[in-house]
Length: 106
Image 1 (cartoon, helix red, strand yellow):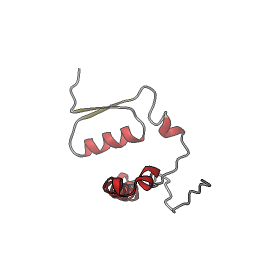
Image 2 (cartoon, one colour):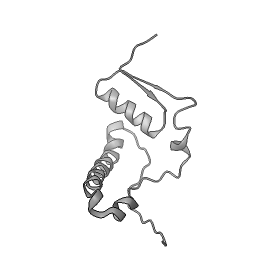
Image 3 (cartoon, helix red, strand yellow):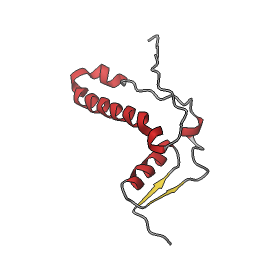
């Protein structure tokens, strides 16, 4: 039996990203997946990368303003991560970040 610093369960987007960052920081990491990488929700969704302000922040105004500001800061960091990921990996991910628009009637 092998010993590792971190065991990551699930080989979707979050699991793989977590394992990658931990390994990059020097941790010994084992990633386990019941099927194959990207087999679950990460591989079956529409593939849309977008950030939106959650309705609860709009409805609660000042009560959640600090939390909303923290989340927006994390969104900005995530955008920067996505923009630099292809260069970091040395390969194209075929990701196109061109903006978008989401519309709702109500």
